[in-house]
Image 1 (spheres, rainbow, N blue to C red):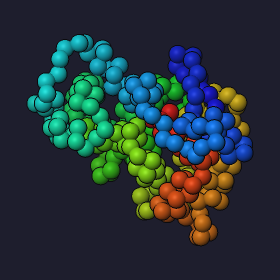
Image 2: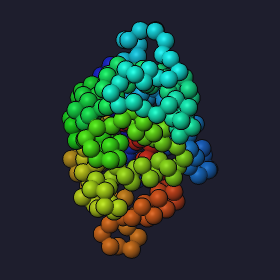
Image 3: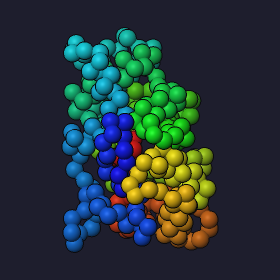
Length: 259
């Protein structure tokens, strides 16, 4: 599936399988083999909307250097030291410096709020309505539910989504779908997330998306995941099913295409 972007180019979106539940070109797969975690390159890193937002801000700010302490005195909320963040994430020292420079330029207070997320995604997906998707994604990053995201939370989340293990990514995905954070995913929650993604990009996907497509995909996913038929999906059911089902794993590439 492909989607037009603000610059009129199209990019591959591994978010949703086709009508048969399979991705026509699943990322990370080789013929005759099981799904494999794709190698994260600088090019794939730059597909991330949040990274693009940060790097663009860094470029606008200019080539001035950033010190090794991440210029902590410039923000109200001081992040952890560079060495500690490097140990906690899969980012290099230079990547953390670049990310922080852009983050500080866009959010001088050291905090990002939900409105900022909505602005970011409306810029990258101007042809759709990104409001609800940005809301759900923000809540997944905002682990303490206080309405703002610190730089540490921001890069820890990005590290998992872009360079985490398969299990780490699936745990993060479960947290996104578990809207009320009660430890279960209901069919209504999964439909809300899926619909928000279609609203953000569905009108400009090729082939075009039908109105009932989100419901159809949720029905197929739930039939596979809800193994004991109790109407909810636990994190163990979610991870086990995803790891055993190549079509679902392929669709989980959404986190490297629409974050």
